[in-house]
Length: 250
Image (cartoon, rainbow, N blue to C red; front, side, top):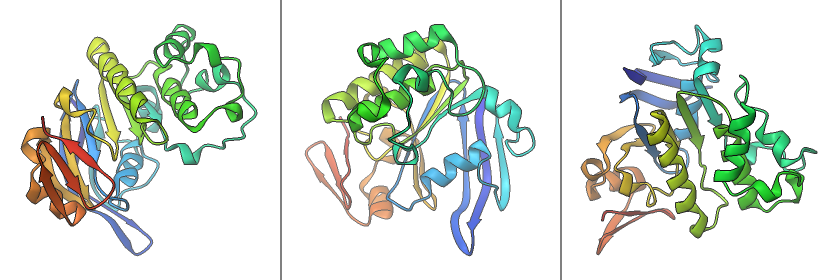
């Protein structure tokens, strides 16, 4: 079974050609990390897969369902965490209330809410207001919110932003363990892929079009990275790109 199928996808926003001839398939269950510079179209691709943005041409299927034709089924199948800057930091809700309200409709499971709070280390903050938390804790609340819903596909847009380096690996380990244990699929758009590499996920190198797709060791080459970041050098076992990104190739 395919979790996601994208073929010849084109998206225009106004006159801007944001995504050009994007094609890839993701088997289920598996993990995909979308990597690219700012403005590469990562968030646009996620929102188009979810049906939030209408495609100009091409085919998208999520578990063999067109998100534009059957958005109700997509809402039941997918749990989504948007970028944190799209969330009102002063929302007058407590942590447990936010985690209990799925961001992509559907219904949360009370047991999963408790579990999500536990695995993200938020139990002691459950009765704190969202606006009282640091940026890193707010990000963990949004991760927990996505985990508190039964879903076959998890989609995260920059889940590691505003999270300290020590917590990034912890969050990725938690997500990967859940994916493996529950046999579900996950798509992550992220600048920081170093903590994901050890799990050998699928990588989609994106800069408005597909630069490379496959396992990390196959697509993380100096040639490919230079295409999306404009510059890439190798120092020992670390790639250094033309933005504030780094990828381990251990």
